Length: 216
Image (tube, rainbow, N blue to C red; front, side, top):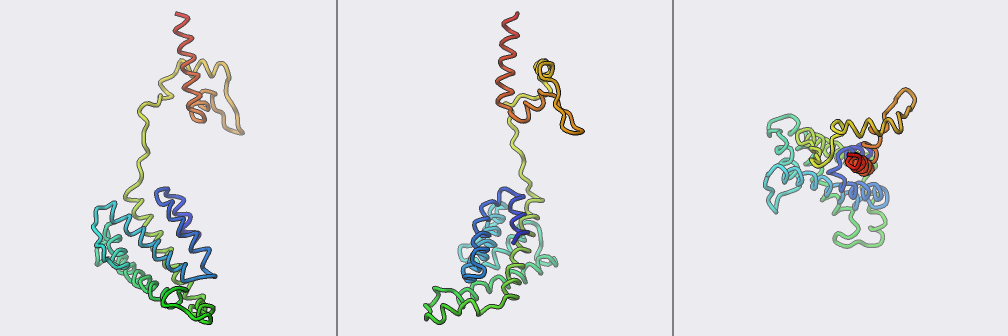
């Protein structure tokens, strides 16, 4: 799960998926049926988000595996590519998550106290790890491929002053405060102020311009 968490952290738009990873990790050993429910929800959310952003319609009755297949198609993999074939196989495995959840879930069809106590023993550790590893692999692959094709473009603030165009003020500020050294690196005071505290840079720039106008 750490690999998926790192990918989510790397690409900010997927930050809300952390809700699922936290739930999965907290219930893996205590209530695996609940972990499985969140595994399925996580993959389904990724699939729906990709399809929605690509304008690919998803029927309200679409199955889990259908959503995953459409997500792969939306990011450019045709149905005959080996990647899609592998992903389809993994999606079919994940499709069984719902059936497995019904078998070991604490609320499905009611349980006797003995069944409730023993339900998590119905799945062995190797199977559990296989399901989780498959989930991580598919989720990371979908997110990374989507992000490679649809990188977020930084929003440029057109009202922000360009540092290179404020030469007079920069020279004044550097003459006043000099340069700051950090090991082998050295930076002028104006550049530090601009990049570290832009609002303060604007304030000092305005004060400088007002003083210059007053001297005229």
